[in-house]
Length: 122
Image 1 (spheres, helix red, strand yellow):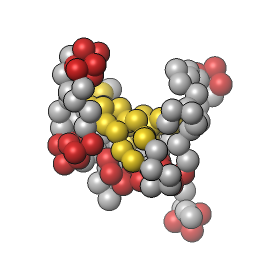
Image 2 (tube, helix red, strand yellow):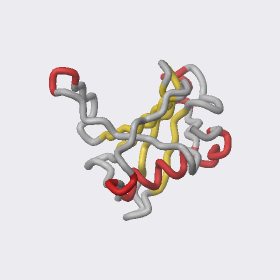
Image 3 (cartoon, rainbow, N blue to C red):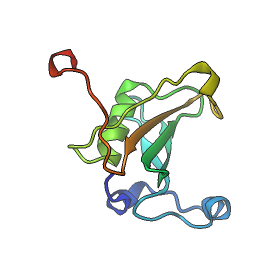
Image 4 (spheres, helix red, strand yellow):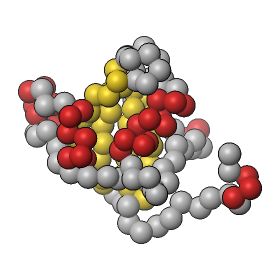
């Protein structure tokens, strides 16, 4: 994940964030609000780097973010050379705290995400 101070202009610094998280974050974590490239609505984003993964959760108020919005967030929060993924886990491991939220993950401990052959990527 990129150094999140590079996108401080999107960082939420409201006292509610400090009350909830204890601070406004740092170069690896924080709460952000980004304008959707689709309709100008607000994308609410929580970023963290814990447990061996960079993680970004993205939500809208009344619907899930779409592909273009997730791609916009990926390009904003991750370096161009980094690969990030969305996961569809087994149903017995699925936990949903917000039906309008999607996630991006990237190992930050040196592991690589396995990819299909190049000709299968589109």
